[in-house]
Image 1 (cartoon, rainbow, N blue to C red):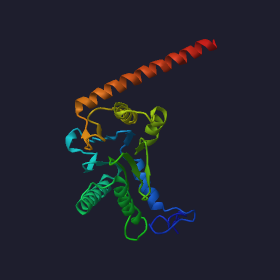
Image 2 (tube, one colour):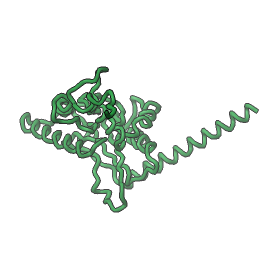
Image 3 (cartoon, rainbow, N blue to C red):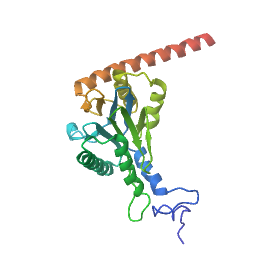
Image 4 (cartoon, rainbow, N blue to C red):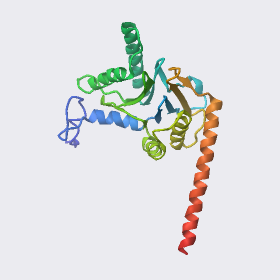
Length: 260
């Protein structure tokens, strides 16, 4: 008789809880996000910036065709991590909901309303048989009467953040945010912090492997950083990182000298 793991009966159906109160399929969907490309978001008083890792798996892929920050409406964008095909379905649904709201009420959809609708859809896919959870998390950011930044979980839960990261580099990026983020950060500082956090998660950061977009309260339209702008930020950040490493080494040497 074949050995059957204790959890086998609980991870085959989305509607069955394990004895310790878990839905294994939701946990597996979260694992897909943890293995996905890193995406980060940073909010300041007058806007929001999103930065995403672009995993170019072949030199034959045209980098410009590989979009990772999706515009939902003029004032809202999303950055995914996990199974991109799942994320695309969620993005398309968000675009549809934004259009319906605009046609119905004659004004842009509030980000909180849109986030709740997407998370209601995600939650429904954890409750009924014959479906599976979406293996994707989204960072949804935008401006209405103020800048907002949300993380949506495969379970359907959502959280508002000042600065957040999802994907395989989450822990590294969040540690950088914890250390460097301040409530009085400005636009330049927020963009630089987002790129720095993302660059720290990559082996060889380059303008081709990073995509960055931002929006401000002033114009309420998303703008993407060009290659030249991105290269300039990266050069500044990498130079600062080198200087920090040199300072740390000098401190280590001085401590060793004082011990002798």
